[in-house]
Image 1 (cartoon, rainbow, N blue to C red):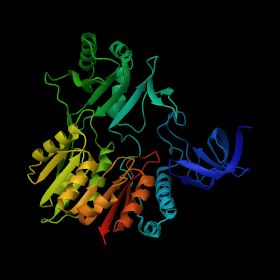
Image 2 (cartoon, rainbow, N blue to C red; image 1 turned 135 degrees about the vertical axis):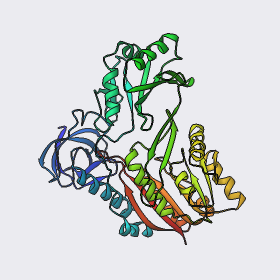
Image 3 (cartoon, rainbow, N blue to C red; image 1 turned 30 degrees about the vertical axis):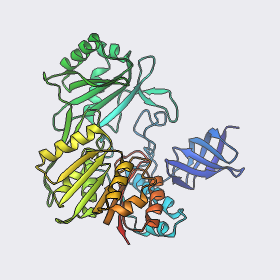
Image 4 (spheres, rainbow, N blue to C red; image 1 turned 45 degrees about the vertical axis):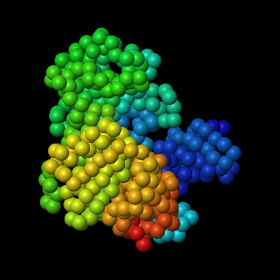
Length: 443
């Protein structure tokens, strides 16, 4: 029998509800909430574990709601729309707390006591600055199913900004769009808040041809919201294809207005480059990092995985010297441009692999008063000793995965750090993903 009923005990990292079958095997269940009794359709199983999806709820959680997205459950993106937003925040904090409490290091477990309430996003829907759509062999545009290559065709995305959905609606009926899709594997649509309108990047199967450029020009000419199109591919770089202006600039930017105690801030990045997708919540993330780092006017700051200077630029205004290191060349170009735009002359940005750069800086024997590290989802394995050598006083760790965060906290504590603050920041409503900012101090 492929359908089993069980009770969900808690939500775990990855957004799964955790329960147990009558035969004793643990069950990881999608689309369930803690305390619910559900019927589960088994999708994968081993001798000790099954994975499945809730197909019927007998005893619903009090905060369960009807998901507003018509593709929810099929699309592999959002996985918490069946809980209201306050419920999502509670669940995300509980996931982090559960991982901390199950860590073998007592000091990591004790950090549960200082875990703060997550900072909610200003927008629960319509917050994404960009989406990346997959294109199948039939020209259908959408997102992949959960853990599958099959595509769920979509007409829009409820967590994307309105201008992105308007762009997709404009593209879909256009003959030039249908023709381009025949040579496209992915389509990225990005909002340009300061420039207005949107930017599209078509990831092509082969190098672009004159006909492709003509079709891109037709799309831009007939769209009121899309102002630039680029082509990219495995064997050729990002290539301007069409735009309203003769000079097709690569930059996008957002300007945050001045707030009490915080000056106005403009951050730019290149099309196809990385920026935080929740731009409204990014302002709160930046403020959190700056407040925890608290650099003094005579202090030095090292920003690892600095990207386009998301934290570097505001931090540099309050310290004596800042060094930002990033592996991606386009991000370093953007960071330098952002520093020039802000009139900052005490910041240096270098392109280098992070582990190599840390090894070199450690050998030089010059620690920084404060170190910022914002690694990708895999965290910072193998860097704890070097971070201890490079950090004079404070380390601020920005994590996008609670599991790798807890692993790294154990290593950092062993290397001589103490956890002082744990502040979750919800950058990704409707999903289980959560950003966490941690302040550690040298013992």
